[in-house]
Length: 248
Ligand code: SAM
Image (cartoon, rainbow, N blue to C red; front, side, top):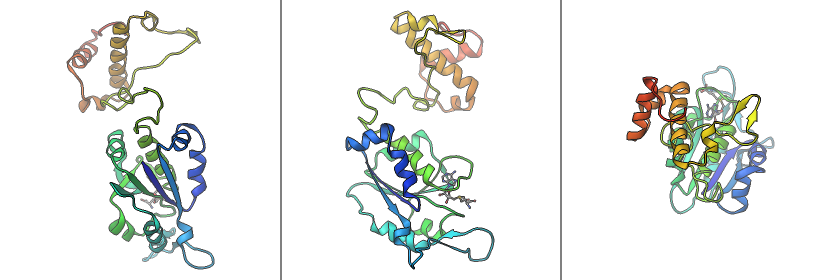
């Protein structure tokens, strides 16, 4: 997977990629990230990337020409390539969106600043507009990093070893079960006995009950679209009637 990020603040992107799992994935060649500074494609001695909005009003708008030149400077890989604009007005980025994007070979991410970018870039050059949530950030860089991070961990080998994302929160539409590690007692809270039992079937069932229970408590709306099997449906019915399955 190759990510191309268009930004006027390249160092914000490099800083995040410097450590952690993405840094490892870069080193191992599992992902590739190229950052294009939009300012390098701007005109004039000051390489200005913004201008006043037509029609007046507050704030500045990112000029279209530098973004367009930056876009055309990017080497398009053979295969599936997509241009994404980060924007609070886009469709909400979800785990399912990340799976869709993981099928591409190249994602080109445009980061806006100020009031946003000139509308004609969106109309003429953008395939998909993504928001990372219903709030307004100062720029698209955090959004681009959120997309890169989420998509990268779905690429085989990025998480290392046999680690699978299959049971992660949102994968089947519900939240993941709680985790415990040593010590056995911490701040008066004990590790649930079942996790020390060594009984794999009991542990599996306990985890499934916990996952469904916490989804009911924290994000009940997810259960309306979750992909639940027969056992899950039974657990859910029992939890709803107060008859939980296994040690809860
Ligand atoms: N004036 C715009 C509006 O009201 O819709 C907001 C522009 S925002 C201050 C500047 C840039 O930050 C946007 O162009 C976009 O790239 C990025 N941005 C802000 N919020 C975002 C969000 N929730 N998701 C993704 N990108 C966001």
